[in-house]
Image 1 (tube, each protein chain N blue to C red):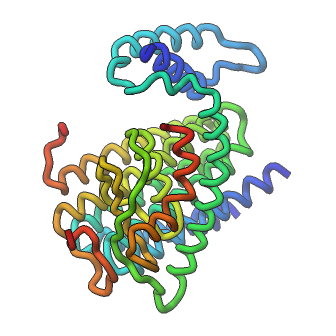
Image 2: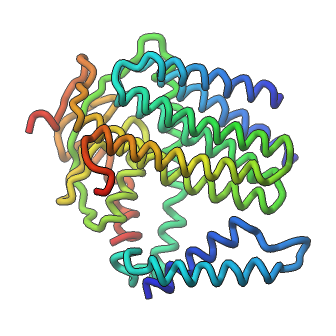
Length: 167
Length: 105
Length: 85
């Protein structure tokens, strides 16, 4: 099953890279070569691909992932204007520090997605991940250093959706 | 219409790139620099590539889409790896930093 | 208009080069090199817009990939671990 998922993903990547559509006619040679190559590399590399392949078959996960994209883009744009304000201000209004937060996510892909989202949102950047559920975060404008309050401010807005996608 | 829209996205993206690089020069220590430059340059590059995506023919659009997805995944990973490397190799925070939970424990 | 965009990107390149030459610690220089790599991707994208030829987009994609792998390797080296962990 792992090999089948990897073969499908590789074949989609091949189609996006080569675009076998020339003036509304499908180019079958490119499609067949891509299918053969993705089957070979899927059988070679399929074992180390993912830990829990049954998660790929929940339709609800894909719907929540589509709902997650506008949230991420909104916070990303807010973050950019925040950074532009802090950089162009003549006095550099920053109070940096490293704080610690707690998360409910446990799976590796969920923790990775949470750390990447934290890095793209206003003023925060993940520094170290503890696999027992703690994250160290560099915050450019520290408001409080209490664990519960910091978790409420930084992590909660992503955790609700990421739990439904990856757990 | 489509050309104008893609040109607007490219101008916005280039300005965000410039802000990120100004942050790279002005901010005081490596963690703040990493933060400003990673955020601004990631969204700026995605804006420029989105301009390419809505202007070009189909094959260019697909490649631009793949590049956007790859950069959105890879750039925060690089920031995380570099910040952890500089913590492990003993680079101090800025002297006016407020709190450091990693040294207290 | 495109010339204006290229001048903005060139100015960002010079700011990155300033940080690479001045950075007090090795990590600062690596940050500058990484950001310089992503700005090269921007240049390739704008050249694609000018020429309407798709192989510049291939250059952009493979440049992003190689820059990512190179920076990860250098950060492992700074951390003081082997490359095979």
